[in-house]
Amino acid sequence: MKKKMFLILIVIVLFLCSSNLIFSKEPPTHGTYPLQIKYPKLMLYRGNSDFKQIALTFDDGPDQRFTPKILDVLKKHDVKATFFLLGVRVQKNPNVAKRIVQEQHVVGNHTYWHPNLVKSGALDLTWEIKKTEQQIKETTGYETTLFRSPYGIANDKLVQKLAELNYRGVGWSVDTEDWKSLPSKKIVSNVINNIHSGGIILMHSAGHWTQDLSGTVNALDRLIPALKKEGYEFVSIPEMWDRMPENDLK
Image 1 (cartoon, helix red, strand yellow):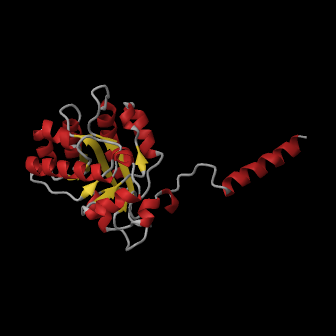
Image 2: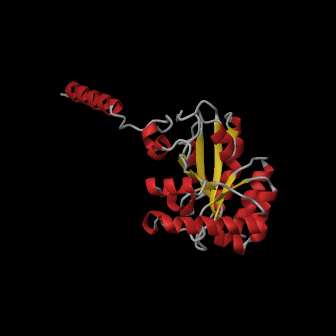
Image 3: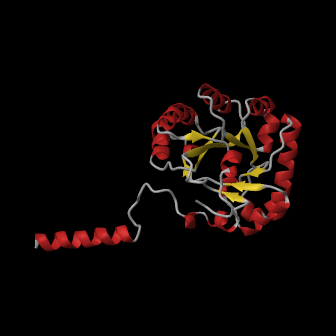
């Protein structure tokens, strides 16, 4: 009876493995990012895995609480990141927005009010992008063509509208889930357990006043040297895009 049960367990394990139902540390496959497959010149969720590269990205800033601390950590470790900024927060925190640009980080457009664009539609996307574009330029002098949709939500209509506006969309392949006010240990674990060559890491440099992103700051200070030790190169989103093979997701 025991021998029979053991053989049954072996069969189940082999089935799960062949069906990809057991988690592995392999990087996400093509099917994970259909918009990047369909629009390789317009959408980027992960970079070329032929290069041991990763990109740090930060959403929802700038603010006075956490963005400066994140900038301090990046400066300490001599790493450049990509910040997707909200227009309303650029207006409220111009000095921090200027510092991001002065310290040579890349800036992206993250809308003005952070709406769900799939619900509000392409017309709202146009207003949100243009309003934020104007605010970033007036405040910092920076002009960007990079866009990240709030909540990472996008569809064909929004991507096509991005193209009309001369923007390219950016998603992510490694989610820290730091917006949940996680402790640094959990954020580090979320990155280390999912990191891969060509990975785009999602973090936040600001949030709702009830959110505590101190875990993000502390995790970042641990992650950068640990990932460098593993041989990863930190690059900006434009640098990662430049390394993408023509019309192919590696």
